Structure formats: C-alpha cells, structure tokens
Image (cartoon, rainbow, N blue to C red; front, side, top):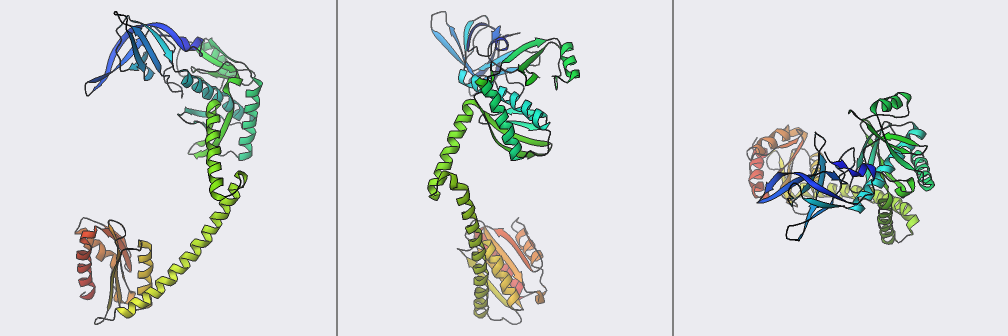
Length: 417
C-alpha cells in the first residue's frame, strides 16, 4: 500500500516515489486510460467530501528523455490502495517525481478546514450538528440537522468564525487507537467516528473543535483566509448552508461586486441603492401587468363583439373560425370565453401559428350542449396527439401543416352535429 505523505505533511507539493503497479481502466478510439499505484504518494484521493488532487508525474526514460504523465484523478480502492489516473503508462519499478497542483490542494485545505470551523461554531452557538459536507468546484456546503436558520443567526456565526480565523489558532493532527477514540466519543469530546477499524486520525482546532478526519488541512486558522456564508436552502432533513473560504471568498466577493456594479449602472443608481431600485421596478411592473391585463380583457370584449357581427348565424348556430399569427394561447382562451359568453348558439375555432406547433382553442356556448373536450381529444387522436379541457372549452396543439384539416373536420361537426 502507498505511504500517504499528505497525512504527515499536507503542504507537501512534490515528492519522489516508484511505480508499484499499473492497470488499464479504459480504451476509447484506440486511446487508453491507465491507473498507477505508487509506493508513496502525496496525491489525495477523493474521500470524506473532499475531491482528489491533480498534478503530474515525471520520469526519465532510458534514453534520457523526460516523460510527463498528467494525473487526472486519484481514488482509493476497497483494499486501501491509491490509484492515480493518467493517459500515460509508466511501468512498474519506474522512479518518478510527483508534483501536486498546489493551488488546487491549498484551496481544498482552506475549504475543508473552514468547514470544520464553521460546523464547530454552528454547533456551539445553535446546537445544530453537521450531517454532511460537500466541497464543490465553486462553493461548498454543509447540511445541518435544523429546520431553519435566521439571517441574524447566520451573521453571528459568520462573525464568530472569522474572529477565530483572525486569531490564527493552531490546527493540529494526531493519530490514536480506536479504543481511545471510542472513549472520547463516549465522553462527548468527539461527535462521531468513521465506521472502520484501526487507528483514528484526529484534526483539532485549538479550543474549538476535535474531529476524526482523513482530509488535508491548514496548519493554523489564519491560513483559511476568511469565510463567507453565501446563503441557505431548505432541505428535506434540515438546512443546507453554502459557503466559501480563502481565495474563493475573494473571487466570489469580486464577482458579486461586478454584478452589483453592473446592476447599479443599468439602473442609474448607487450600488447601495440597487435593492430599493429593484423593489420599485417590481412594483411598477406589477402595476403595469395589472393594467395590461385589464386592457387585454377590454380588447377581447370589443374583438368578440366585432367578430359576432362579422359572423352571422348559419341556421341555428354561429361559427367563428380564425387563425392568428401574432397572438398567444392566453389571448385565444380569453377571446373564446368572451365569444361564447356574449352570444348563444355560438361556436369558436381559434388557433395561433405564432409558434410551432400551432395552439388550438375550441369553445361552444352552453345552450348548444357540445362537449368540446371530448370532441377535440377525438379529433387530435387521429394525429397521435392529445388535447384537454371542459365541455365548454378545450385546447391542444397540432403541427401547422395539419391545422386546416383539423379545423375543417371540427367545423363540420359543429355545424352538422
């Protein structure tokens, strides 16, 4: 098994090792992907909510040429062996030098240590235990066993976390026998233990947290570099808290400021006045929508009256058949309801070809006792389509190519029941 160098020194970014094993894991279009095992490695495998490291393995060929094998992923198998995924094969016994992508490793250390600190403060202040942790590419999250957290509580937690970061408290690691760890668990010093045998690795933040963890961590809280809570989301079993630490917090704050500045410029207000300006725009939009809806309803009433004059009775009933190119389905339903409410013995076949497929609305006044829902469903079924609605009004969709054919059939049924 690989000697895991990151346990003793999480800051180790380069190391010497030998290839102990190699296996092909996939082949696509003649290109293979390999997994390499090393006798010692500083590459962290995906585990415990923390993603794997990436980087490079280099070796020197028998001819003196430098070979480079990029490390794309790192994982641990069920036997505890660490495998390094690469597109370049390196034979067993080859001497290599490994280079861990330090910016990625440092970022993961900041997020993971920040999570330990955040979870500890949340537990102390709010009594909410962390049930899961996810370290993502852009943000990280913890899920808490608590129904809700107020904005005031979030701010208080965030302030306390950043005060501890500023104090630069020591973050230390030690390994103890499982029996001793179980005693700490029973005493309440530890909140949980991993379900495995053997020694237990503990990460301790001075006077604030003690946790069983196999991840990589900073040496002092100051290296976390600050923590920013981004928000919360209600989950089925609790609350999810989104946060960023270190350089991520700086990048996030910079991006948020750019977004806020863009919004302020577009609204012609100062950055601090954006929220008030947005509220004002929303209120104006709501009033405008209400006014527009009223005008649309009035227009539909006038339109219906005009159409009734243009379409006189044919025997004992009136048929209004129209296809629009510039109206949506909502207006069709409104117009149809006005038509059948304004005059008895009236049928309406309305369609809009604004989009593909065409939208169809079929309606009939109550005195005709026509089941529009059944009629439209039956007509559309001939095309393998479905429609729906009540006896008085139904709607559906059909390709524009078949619209005239559909309407011709429905018109015949309306006029000759």
